[in-house]
Image (tube, rainbow, N blue to C red; front, top):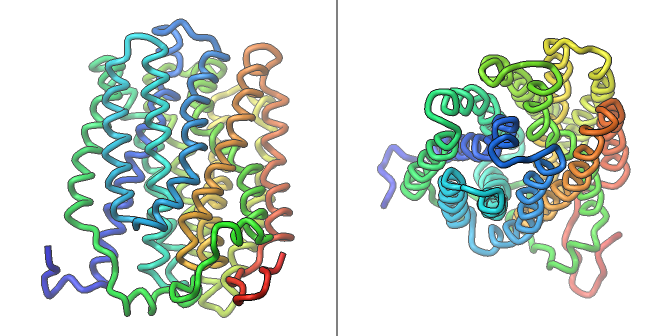
Length: 419
């Protein structure tokens, strides 16, 4: 379908951004279903905290395994095709989860969801990299990524309302069907940018440069810095997604209906923090600070707020927990929104999907290990140790990022890449 005269590339990119935003909303609604319904599903399928951790890890394990291939496929076949396939697949898996009669069936469909969902993130970053210049890239990326936390905000009241009004299965059916509709919209809206427009928009990411080969990519120091920083920091956000709603119900005494009324608050503040910090880092770039340095300064500043998490077990009132995790959520999304732009500012555009895919796999792997740890301690020794560990992870990640990541250029033929 050809573009109408008024639909210039400058206008089309904002339409595309809007659809990506909606895709991200549904991505997070779908994955949040089990965390909001944790007590209900535990009773329905006869699970304890270890069993729930197993259900989460089925999703996260499949997610981790699929993330790196998804990034490679985005670089190989383009963001448009992979986003379409991913949305169709995970929406179908979500609908199917609502038909589950046994724990094994539910775990199987959550695994399929985990295989399909990673396609959206490298595809989204690829779209931002090729459609937007460096001075707008963090803002555009944060707008797309903000859809994920809008999804987390919407998830609690939507899922709670569906479950209370129509039964827990409806909480799987409705978001899945909405996703299938959005996939159709994406098919009509998305187009790759004109060649000249790509060149004008990617002056820092280097869309016109020669890309790293796969072996060369693994020999860059910056790749390992990004991988390790996500391995260390991502478990905090996964805890917010998969354990916080249940913690508020089982430890702080909120009902499912109250989770619908109040459980979205930390995710709202997370969104505000993530978008605000991204706008700040873009403002630093416009003031003349090197883009990569601007992102690092933003991430380091956010990491200094992370230790507030250690206070959680010392305040039993649910309002205190919500307040603490509003700060923690803002730290998490400052990192997730801006570290994606670090990738775009560090590597050629043709490698962005692969790097982000590998990084997502490492982040999910860290979350798997931490979920096992949480599942064992939450039901036996309590949560104090968990929150103490969570409090220090972003500080460690900030040190790793500051000391290892730099702008990478593909090696000249006949020379080895710098390590």
